[in-house]
Length: 146
Image 1 (cartoon, one colour):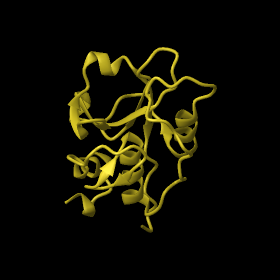
Image 2: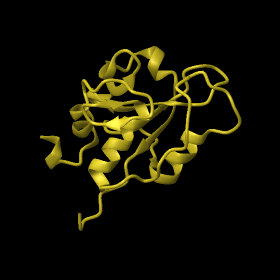
Image 3: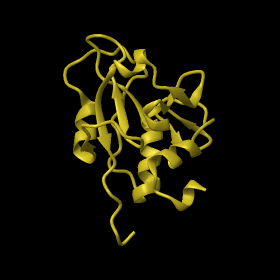
């Protein structure tokens, strides 16, 4: 059904059950958290915004800069107030880069994300998850001629 919509939550729900695969972005075949967002982007706009550089699967990766945050700022709109359909960026370890993504759903009570061993799942946006959100982004509007 989501093939007829550009709603980020509906598109993310199509990915539920997709196995986890680092750096992958193929609906039903394999995806990581960035691959999920890339797949939603392609469904909304028809092509990738940009191809990601190589990245490690480690959520606790340290290093200079915030490459994922920088990429989100290049292509999405910062959001102030929580709303379903937003892309959530998480920092999962202190002093590490922000490297995990999800799509808010269920009136702010849940999110859809990809994680090792579970694949793409819908999960509660519990207090431990919520306190790790460092930024929220909106997908830009789909052009009218699309």
